[in-house]
Image 1 (cartoon, each protein chain N blue to C red):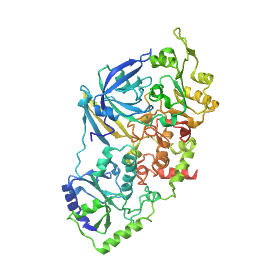
Image 2: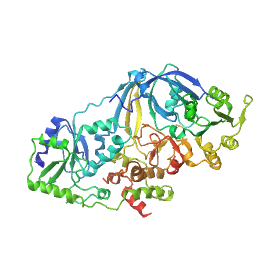
Image 3: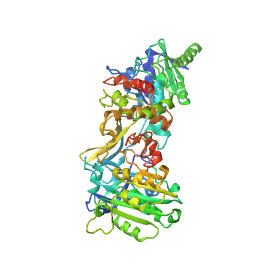
Image 4: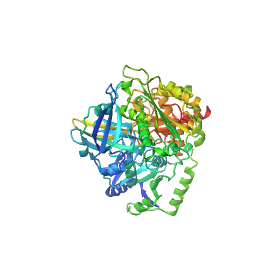
Length: 344
Length: 286
């Protein structure tokens, strides 16, 4: 196990930047976000969690597929290559690290493999960053409901933890181990520090955020049974503006659009994030749209995460990070909806 | 990134365009692969679909209308969409000439369950424009290498008017064969029409295919499906033995973009073919 004084964190950042691309939390005034770091001093670990989830490290808001010229043959279209240096994704909270594993099942573990997700995942080393179990949980979080601990190492290659003025770093995977041993900005941690680290990982398991007892199969079935109970969905979606903010900040929302953007004759086919909250998401060329009403779309989102995803992939598509609740302009809270559904 | 990437279309050339109906808004496009490797990899079965791709316009999921037994090309029958909003891809395709090059991704989705259909009597019921992948299935079953694998084949196909029937030459050829029973009907006859008049559900009731060792494969507009299904239930067909194909808005076609789900199934990758028994498990959200 290794450590570094938090004051000297920029030394570590400098070393990582020399090895590849460093993506880390940056204070942007209105909150923190993951950004590519160009100045090592920007790295700032004094945050609770970032505004946007770190999914964009693997699933960027826009991903270019092909460059084309409408006046030329399809044979002249150029597929866009992904030339990536090693990426270090630094400061990922345990619930977010868990989200990568959930997204892996969808993007690369089942059916067709998404080559962009796979390649970005392979080139990235994840530095997890434990929540401090001594700090009270943010009111929006409910990761413990989903079985995720405040200091869980799952999903990280290296797990980092604050202890006083120090940052402790422990390898979780062989990839993390190799990287740690090559970083001479770090010093060896003591046996006491290692014990503190392991104890915190263990106590993090019992750290309670908002909690309700959710059994995967029970909630999946419950929502299936509730699906056609329109009054329930109308009530919970009454305030919803269909703005889609909840899906954009979500670490496990993966819906995307593929669109062509042409300026004069030249253009790019790219994928961009999309949201099941938008009215035209399911609008067919015939004019038919199975989800014209707000309640149908919010129902789709809740049921997808807490029912369909379980039926399809065996896991809940939510990690309880609380971002959708924090960012909803009308205070819709997915935790309360699930809680209410269970009581129906 | 460029090889084996499911999002990158293969280049194809339009080698033939067939104007199918007298309203000229449905055409068949015969496509030839420009790379031999792509052609070799494009192994499909009836019931599957592809994304037709036109750079600058986008992509559209379209059922494959040709049968894999027809070698050297793939065919798609496409309606120019735009009654409600402009169909960008289909309109652009309809404006193209033979010799134009476009893109193709696929084959996508599951297929009509060929192994399940083998040794059974097959009743194919189609309405209007929703006959494309049924035509693929019929031509596949009728091929000399395949015909003996299936029992009796009955086709009941209807359109609003005689001029709206697709694949008129093939329908005429099937009517002449004795190894397929072909029943063509129109909702409203005109002076040229000497055949049957009547809605598809009524004709199905009249023909009354036996449910014994039989599977019904039904595609058509929602109103036809709505009135045809009870006929088949009354005849004694089980929900496991009635198959259909769903449509939803799609983008990726490979189960990734999250758009075409009905409950826990993605129509693009778990479907588009489902039995009624399978659909019963899903919420009514399509």
